[in-house]
Length: 374
Image (cartoon, one colour):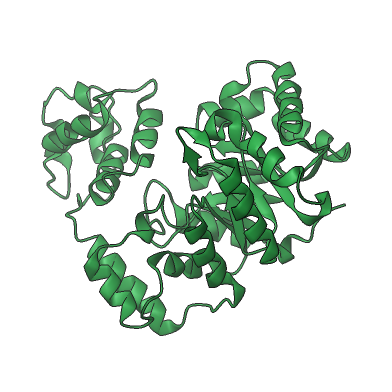
């Protein structure tokens, strides 16, 4: 039985950051949180083959499947490209997931972390899109989609090639709307134009938008005193048309209560509140950014073939969000088969053609310090 994707719960329970005791998932706490979530009228649980070393899916079985009627909840899980090395691996992993979760079917099933390069190539190589359609036809999957971390160009390509996709999960938050690595705004616009339902991950950017500094909090509290920074991040995303469900990797009962309160009587952002978020972004982005316009004049003549503008994008994001791992992942994919920033020979060709007169050699040294240490 299919689900009306337009009537999904606005808040989804992400099972990637579950509470632990001595390094083991605390099932009693997860049970309490799952019960509270369901009692509040929500029902979307999101897990994956790799979360908590595979134990997240097992927690689904213990905390949810064994304790609540199957029709009272929906489960989403994902197929990991990095674990697929043969056609047989697709069914092997899928059947293991069914067993771990203790279910006969998944309400939502995603190709995990589709992005430019290895992951997307693997899904195509092993015909995972057609495989997913067959699973849906067999009743083992109710709805089929993918989570996405790639470029806007790749998203358009995949959607053109695979119109069978029913929904897409993207990283979306107010800090990443114009981010040249994450592309939140552009991805949202592509999906909106095609009327494809959007599931959102990282609405708080890994907790960063839930833990703002005092200056940013003062801006928000001046309008809605006492409301959490997280509630602002969630309301920003939930106010966007086409967003069906917003995932929150809740680790505590307190986080859950705050999130549920945000959505029980949901209020879209007012114009005044949107302006307040713009002010918060101004404060957050005061960190000096490299003024690269991505004209790419520097690339053609680089004797080492370094993708300078793309590396600069990673540097800008790293400057703004030092603890964010996405720039490192982006960089790793960028230099796979290409030159690292550390391979710059300081010939100066790039600086000689740069219309912005940027100190590119020193910027590449900075990039190497960030990304080439591993």
